[in-house]
Structures are given as structure tokens and as C-alpha cells.
Amino acid sequence: MTVSQKEVNETLKYIKEKYPRSNDNGLQSHILARSDSPLAYMNDARFLDDVQRSQKWVRWAKGFGLRKTINKTRTSYTIKHYIEESEISKGYVPNMAAIVAFIIEGVNITSNGNPYTNLSMKCFVKYKREDLLWAIT
Image 1 (cartoon, rainbow, N blue to C red):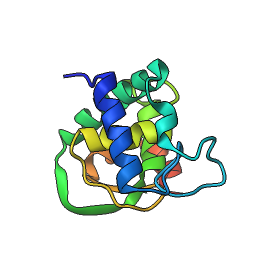
Image 2 (tube, one colour):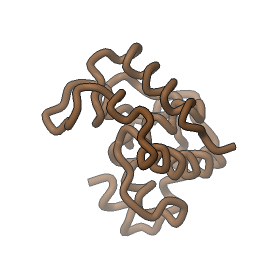
Image 3 (tube, rainbow, N blue to C red):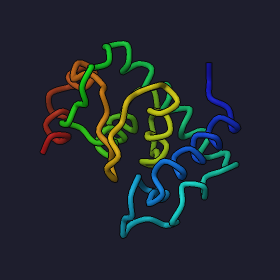
């Protein structure tokens, strides 16, 4: 099932409540943030599309299984690049779109600015070796 605008808006409100220092770029204050609140994305049709494309990738990645512990080798910012370069998404997605997709899909995240997840490493090694190398450097 594809996420609706209502679900995205509710998730953005949840993020702002649970992570008061969150912004449009991550879960805590960041110099590159364009807005001091993830709520800036509410009712934004383009952002909804970004979340829906991210959600498709996250569902694919969940097919490899979720870890019981947090995987501290990839942050949401690194994962967003995997999403952007995938055949599923093909295009730019904001970091916050990936974070929203993680929450909607029940992926555990940490509370740092660019959160870690409990996605399995298997979804990352699916990519070509060259892609993996840039992601871990």
C-alpha cells in the first residue's frame, strides 16, 4: 500500500514531537537546513512523491530482513543515496523523505541527526562493488 499525504503529515508531526530539534534535513539542528521544522514538508505533493519512492526502496530492503540491533554502518543520509541511485527511485530524495519512509515502514531508527537503522547489510551488498565503496568511504 502506498503512503497517503495524511500519513506523511502525521509522521512529520510525530517526528517534530519526538525530535524537537528536527528540521527539514534531519533529526537535529543542522547548518544546511532550509527550514527549522520538518513540518515545512506538510501537504507538499513533491515531498509525498519523494516519500513514496523512498518507501518502495525501504520495502525492497526490508525483504532482506531487519536486524535485531541498529546497523551503525549506514546513516539515513548514506541510505538516501542508495535510494536515489536505485532502479526503484531514480532521482533525488531529501534525507527527511527517507526518514519518514523508515518510520512508516516500521524500521527502527536512532535519534541522532542522520539516524542509523536496523536494515540488514544484505540490502547494501546487493549493489555493485564500486557503489558500495563510495558509500562506506
